[in-house]
Length: 398
Ligand SMILES: [Zn+2]
Image (cartoon, rainbow, N blue to C red; front, side, top):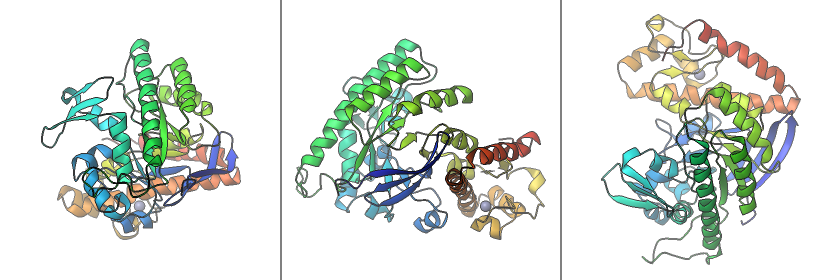
């Protein structure tokens, strides 16, 4: 089990890589997109929906599960996979990003992030050690080191201080996971019944920070890799910087990360961002965009995003995307989806989410195929051309 984590590159095309990531709960074809299941559920979806749409790995949020129903309860139920009924790979974030997002309800010290729960106002201190402990109890296949998420824009001084703290937190995170893994299997907490960890093969990713400053990114990449994580993520992007700056930072940072490990770009992005960052050597993506936007009526298509609320769809019998093979597009018209959305039917969220996830996962599938056949650049060009059609037609408001 200890060597369950493995990454193999099957083909590459320019900087784009087609790979296979092996985890204790199965294999993920990369480049891959992870739907976000904030509360241990991808909103509106069942496990069957995710599988049928081709999801191979999902992301769950440590912050939310720690507060409710509690990582100890989940560990006693056999771990997160068993608790949520998903037996495929799971990545958990460290909880840091959500704690940071609490604004005035949080304070950062060298020890960790002090925050008040958004549920009941109770006070918590999320340290690198606690983030590792919680994720070990949840038993995700990939755990993330606690990092400091810096707001954009930040001065170079602020970015340096934050990057250096992330390195210190990274060392503590790594040390803690190695210590947890040295505990005998069957080790339990002081309550005598909660397992210390529920997935002996859990891997841990370190996070490269440094805002938009190339020197800081370079130093962070070098020093984070010196800690010796299983793989590495690029954090601190898609936080308000321009798309060009984001692409430049990924271009400069990805090649600094070990070529034989998967590279994860955190919290990105639009379909165009995905294809552009694959072109820069990224293998793993997660983002709330397809699921959150679906619930707001924005549907992604090969011709660009479509806002199903728009009056022009009131009597439109076509599916959302005429080339899409998802359940929603095979059964329902834009007119009906618009009606469900305006009537605030629960089914609107489900059907819209099904389509958006299918679009993201199918796009990644086509990207993987193109890399394998050496035709990634022509796919990239064709995608850009087609995806801008509706944007040019001013049909993408909201
Ligand atoms: Zn569809």
